Amino acid sequence: MKPVVKNGILLLIVVVLAFGPLIITRRGEFAGADDQAEQAISTIDANYKPWFRPLWEPPSGEVESFLFALQAALGSGFVFYYIGYSKGKHSVSKKDQV
Amino acid sequence: MGMSKLKNIGLLIAYVLAVYIVFPNNAYAMHIMEGFLPFNWAAFWWIAMIPFVIAGVRSIKATVTLHPSLKMLLGMAGAFAFVLSAMKIPSVTGSCSHPTGVGLGTILFGPTAMTVLGMIVLIFQALLLAHGGITTLGANTFSMGIVGPFISYGIYKGCQKLGAPLWLSVFLSATLGDLMTYITTSFQLGLAFPAATGGVMASVLKFMGIFAFTQLPLAISEGILTVLVINILSTYSQKELGLLGVFTGRELPTSKQEAKQA
Image 1: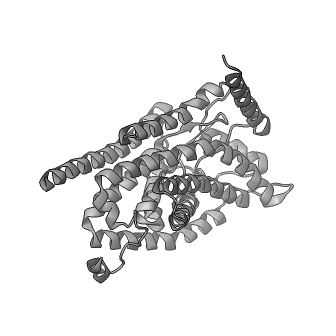
Image 2: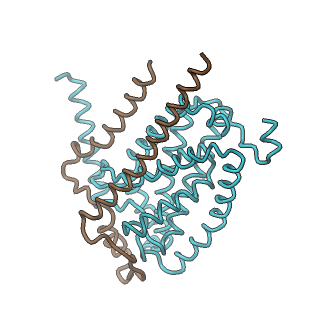
Image 3: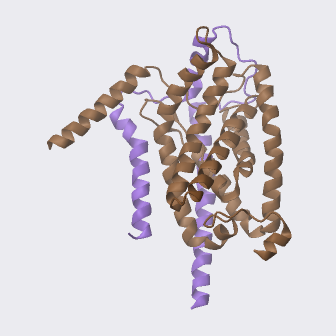
């Protein structure tokens, strides 16, 4: 099997794993942990009060998703920069050998 | 529609229903939030984290002074953890969680290097996203940057010793490391919030049951993505992976002399 095909199949499995739950679990709210966490702990210890608040919180859901997207973009930007860089280096050194 | 297809769909529905009956609440499956660990526990995990961070800084320094060419790859391992931590992916339990992405760096640079990189990712999320927290940084670093990577590292080395193929070692290492991170989080919460009846273990099991199910598909995704990146690296960055002993299972030389001999 060609490496591209093999990696393509791997990627496809990840896509199915990530989007499958949206289709098979229609009743899910798919909420993040942040809001339900308080309830989860208060069912065990109703008297617990968080003793420290975040120094800064994103003012809205939009700002928060912007920052998460920024994090992903910066990370994947560098990951793919590195892959491109090594691919270039690899093909140059192969040319030199020929 | 064939009989077997119907049967498969039936099984899938039964599985999802079973998950709902056993775990009716939305899962609480991410890092521990700011202020949500009592002061003593927060301090305990901070203190437990520090020696690993020092060891990690030393390990990174040793690696980059011996092989300056590996700096870029180290950055890439950190960037991989950065991306995966930003991906809140839906799971079969009807809630979201995110992978950790530290398995890749562990396989390349060893577990303590990822303690440092994992901590940097957690600090970013705590300060800018109010996700996780500074008081709970110790606990979150302990699960994502210490227990996860050490489990990954152990499994990777074990598989290599047993002669497993590279892809399988990488897959198991990243997947189980990811799962163990969230199992550790459940222990940390269970210890801090023991249930009125059943105590610590009852709480741990409650958190763990939810975590294991939510995290399982994500852990598998992380395993597959890590295999994918290792596949790409072993085509284009053979030299770097060779220096790190990824193929041979040999340790990175720790002194300059050893490096010259190698």
